Length: 223
Length: 305
Image (cartoon, rainbow over all chains, first blue to last red; front, side):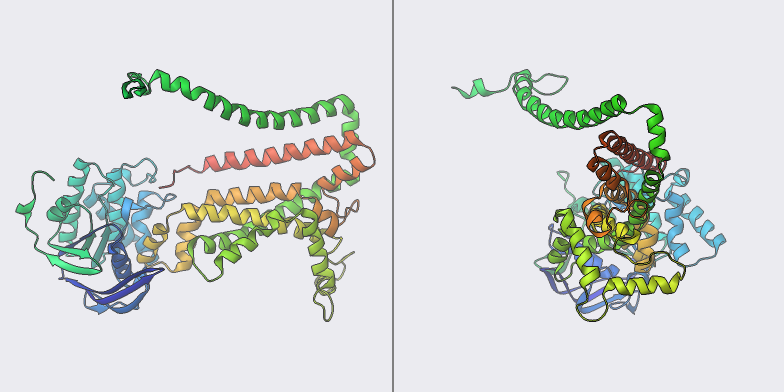
């Protein structure tokens, strides 16, 4: 589960006060809101990349407010699938397990498994240069899932994709997240994306996060 | 005039521009190319003049004699050595400095940033003079830094012929470093500015410490910048003259580097020898630049994203 309690964050002149919401274990939460409203700041705070000035963050039952990013058991998929330009796809998938000192055999197994699940086996020895947007996102997702996190944070992961790839990625993300029983928080601008991928929809406005009903029928043909 | 007359003619299907628009832009581009071309021409003409003069006035055997001259051979060796040390030191300082400036906000950052530019804007002779005063007149109490350095060197290398900094090889390197490093810091800062902080943030979430994220993710991404900074520092160091003259002197066979050779030969009227050494410096600079470019291309090139 992802529980944010009265969270306050300060980043330069930007302030966020008293933000609270909860995503139950195994559910897929989507966070929407205007550009600059602080969605990404909330996500960074959950990931341990922004100093928190008040409140609590509870992930999978543990208070992680004062833990480092690496100790929180989260996978992070940034916007545009920021990859390590000098590493091969295989090295991307093995990076986390290696940092966490998994045994070599177990790392190789995990890489194989991820590559199969995400359909990137044929890319394992390529570097990010020349990969398509969808391929990059698959690698980014694989890298985030490599250390078997209980929580996955995705920051507009699909915004740079064309429509067909977009839909493929949505079903892929939803499948792997559900299979692994991961609790996810996904930031997006698209209502359509929110409706197809999410279980719960949160809307952030004026520094307040509120849950909204997510009815898939609401999806209008105009969108 | 009616609006219709101002409308562009039907666009050229190949370029999407109207023919009239393209013609109207010509003087603009002609001016740009003309002005830029003039400068380019001046650079090429300068080098061509050196080359022509050297070929005219120096025979092949004289050329051989010149480089067999012990003083000149020493000057070339010292130049390569001191520039290499300077480049390495500059990179060692520039990588952390550039990273801190690019990634972190701290009180007084604007001031720090400005101070780091001082060596770039300071007149070269002033850099040398400042180093000379710093080492020989500071601190105002007790022995000067020069005396301390001399003592330290004597302790570490008892057999050393002329320990000390001022008017010695360390002064050459310090004089080069004080200026070259500022350029390396600029380069590294720009490099880190172009690397998304997201990459290291991802590494942090995967369990890296800050140090490990920096070393295993950021530094490899910044590698091209590192080699550019090193090359820039190397070539800047080779061109350094003013600070070396004041702080290290230009003693033959001791603190003479190629830029001092050019000056020494020129000052005794040996213009042709000065030109040959100058051209050698140009050649070395070009070789270094090309070598680094080629070596960089060997590593796969990626666009930033």
